Amino acid sequence: MAFRITSECNLCDACVPECPNEAITAGSRIYVIDPMKCTECVGFFDEAQCAAVCPQECCEPDPDRPEDNQALLQRARALHPDEAFTDDAPSRHATN
Image (cartoon, rainbow, N blue to C red; front, top):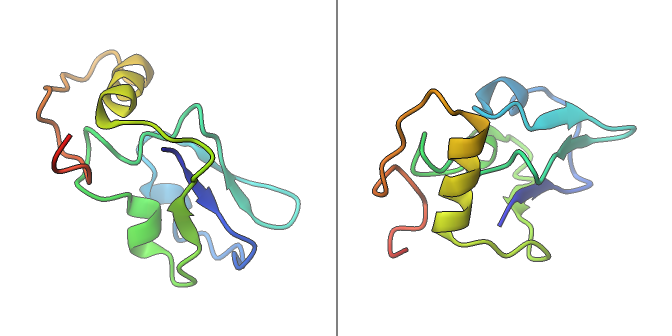
């Protein structure tokens, strides 16, 4: 599932440069994550970097967008066609 940013966001900018997909942009009051660009950092890291660096702890999985590891990996491949993502690429989904 894509991550989302909750209303506790204070626009601190910590998450923006950490996103390998450039999925995070400023909204009217908080940062927002484009779910069509979010891969939960699958292929790059074993945890979502936005959540790892957020001092407000407001980056969380979006329960309205359930996706498995394969769907996220497929999106990473589409967003980064020059990268070679293997099926065992880094992911927080250890069992998928």
